Image (tube, rainbow, N blue to C red; front, side, top):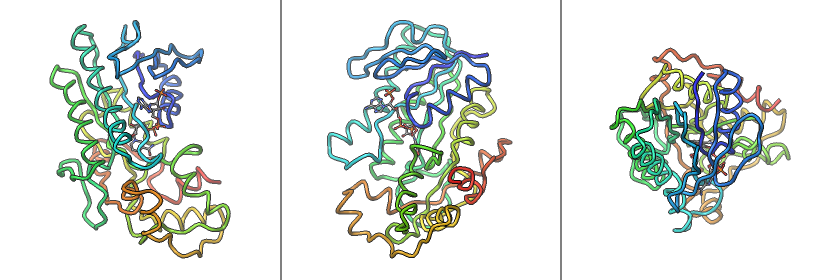
Length: 300
Ligand SMILES: NC(=O)c1ccc[n+]([C@@H]2O[C@H](COP(=O)([O-])OP(=O)(O)OC[C@H]3O[C@@H](n4cnc5c(N)ncnc54)[C@H](OP(=O)(O)O)[C@@H]3O)[C@@H](O)[C@H]2O)c1
């Protein structure tokens, strides 16, 4: 049994991950911008802008799982929003690092989320793996800074794992719900060319990968994506089939997406292929390697 501090615990991944960690017999503590009342774990507050972590949050902690970060796809990327997207990831990581180092805390592992945005919003047939260089667009830059901050834990001898995560599909609150809303109403269609890749992962597989890092089965940088490469059109058409809904509307025009979402539309209109080979080579067996079975599990 390990004591695990989870940041961003109230989010999509955090909620499912906490259920799994508790079911596996670990002790969980959470830290967030406001206090949570849940009798299953102790909850603490922090404010990275004020360099503040509530006393006791780091006491007895073996593993930190860092998920906190302002949502990337909830609104236009104004300069202020962009700063928040970066700072809420990088400065929170730096705050945790400073506290651990200053207090010489015996943390054994630091596990951080990152994103496949590291490879950029680029549509082509190249399959990106962990050794490939990062792209240069905004999200790639966010991921580079975020990972650099996380790797500081490694420099002080703490085992560090980074999961470059694809689009997480879950039963509620994920990108899948946004994508399937028009399909439910019979007006679903691919976005832009529909040819952009959409590296995806079932929430159950992602949480098991975090558990694998907690249990020291993996260490280092891994792409957390399913091995089955799917384009936006594949996802939309498969979802419609699983939901038994028609899907014949013309694609949502690229220009319209750009007008509505501005620069943020890049992550909806473009997408690269990302390899799951390294995580498979580590011995991990996917519960949902195929898109169709993942969507059947989540949408039926
Ligand atoms: N979901 C995906 O498809 C996906 C894909 C790739 C990467 N990721 C990454 O994985 C991590 C977790 O994803 P998620 O989907 O669970 O995210 P989420 O649902 O948006 O939750 C993130 C959590 O971060 C905290 N947070 C939000 N804004 C913040 C801010 N301005 N400052 C500090 N903390 C803030 C919140 O926790 P409190 O309210 O408790 O503070 C929130 O619940 C994120 O960093 C995300 O970028 C997610």
